[in-house]
Length: 142
Ligand code: DQA
View 1: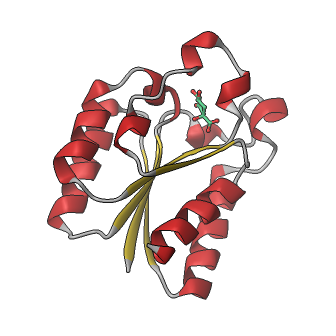
View 2: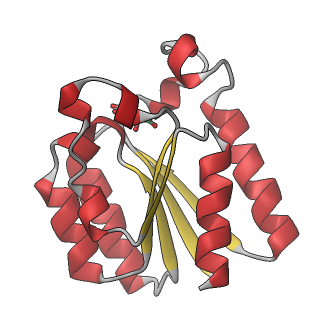
View 3: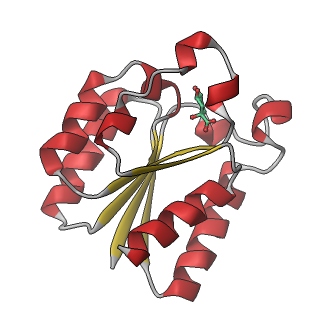
């Protein structure tokens, strides 16, 4: 099984950005956590982070060409704005799971809509880094 994990804008700043919301662990720590977990589960993982909407769209298209089995995506701020990422997920029709580190349901009104989520089978929200591991578990168990 081959899973692509996509992280959107500012998630490369984990550990520095708003630690009271996102915690003090870094993006590199998140990557290690995911890779170690995937190795334990015998899953092949590709990690992708970008601050640019079009690059995320391109990565989703590439997942189709690479015959990826599942996508875990935290589109970060693009969650709430990007019809392009929603359309890309719909275009490739690869099983996708939405992850948010913080509990967006308890935050500002503009965070209450998720475009990408409309193309995802499941969401893990407000579980911190553990949400990524639960998303991998979901894709494995399908
Ligand atoms: C986030 C929540 C988004 O609203 C925010 O823009 C982010 C991170 C999260 O993981 O909690 O950048 O996706």
